[in-house]
Length: 144
Image 1 (tube, rainbow, N blue to C red):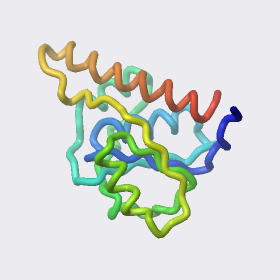
Image 2 (image 1 turned 90 degrees about the vertical axis):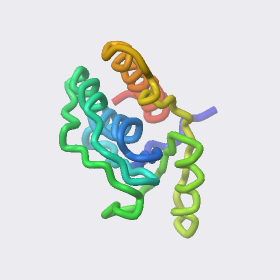
Image 3 (image 1 turned 180 degrees about the vertical axis):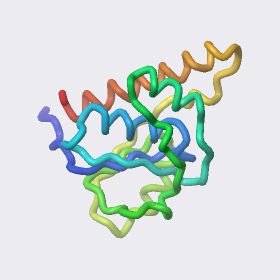
Image 4 (image 1 turned 120 degrees about the vertical axis):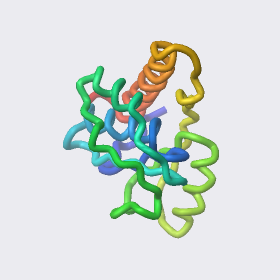
């Protein structure tokens, strides 16, 4: 089976654009710099997430500029590939892009915000999601 062509632009979508989709956006930007234009959005409006920013900082990625936005708020929704990270986001995204010829992939991704316990336990859940996303991104787009 041949690897799909590398897109020039990709949009990651999750429920509220707080954790998973910005993680994927920043990881893709970090790994593929000028090769892939990455952005992210949510189905619903969300808030900034300090844990997401903290675990991205561990990888040398400054995610402090991230401001959650919805699909409707995107300045440019013309992309080569959309990757949805939750089943709810997938349904909303398919509907949003129904009139556009865009490829949509679904990557079920764990929600680290449901983790409970000590701060270190929560951070461990976020790290696990970050690793999962990075592995998927590398597998899908190849080496940077």
